[in-house]
Image 1 (cartoon, rainbow, N blue to C red):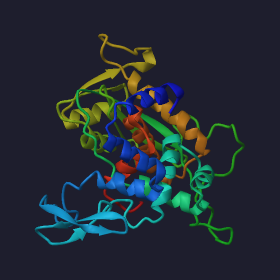
Image 2 (cartoon, rainbow, N blue to C red):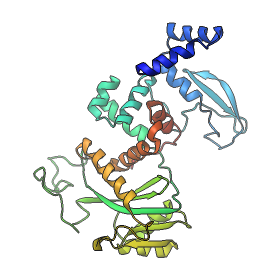
Image 3 (cartoon, rainbow, N blue to C red):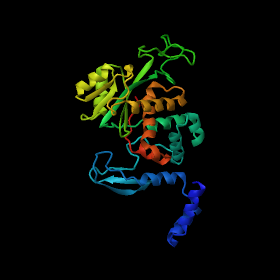
Length: 328
């Protein structure tokens, strides 16, 4: 809180009743612990349905370990706000707000470990517990821009190969830093294609692609793009094939011919700008293991989606609201 905001707060203190001043006095005298603040934050968002049977008939059922518990009136199972989410059974809740700040700032594992006062292995595990959630199948509508981008394929941190193994390592030969990893049209053994989709309202979806065929694009677009949407892309044939199969109206721009805008409406500047921000943000990690790439894409989309309301608490609630799935 800066000086001007503090001055405004002091003025509002004069307008408080005696009961409100007593509450403020008690809060300043006995500030809540970080663990209590996280529990209060989670208790403010009552689950909408039972995680076991999906019934909406639930009620309060006491507290345990500082968290509110609920009971389903249909299946009679009890649960807390974290049951069935990526944060279920995760300990040391007093460190979560600090970890939420690390997610907001995009900190490295080492810096995050220092910030939260935990081991580097714990910071790495927490990162992917918070991020390895069910990806929201955002359904984009209106004018949807789509473009593919590429990341270097990486086996960073892999223990599937050791120097004692007889076969060759599952990665390309080492190369000097600063050299290009590939040339245009090189094998996908070196590059991982990612399809980025973004509509004009700012909603973003992404898909890590196993290849660059029309069928792969068709599956990704059919998952994230509404049938009545209008697709804008470059002139790649894969987009035209996928749009025709799905039944989407497609506006293909001849970007090689310097066509960047058509009729003052159709362009792919939004998705290209997002690609640029994504690549700039990813550089801080000095390479991301391919197996964890979907988590980092989700991380960046969370930052974009939260925007001005981004805060450590917002990142915790966003992760706690998603069902847990295993990493693949």
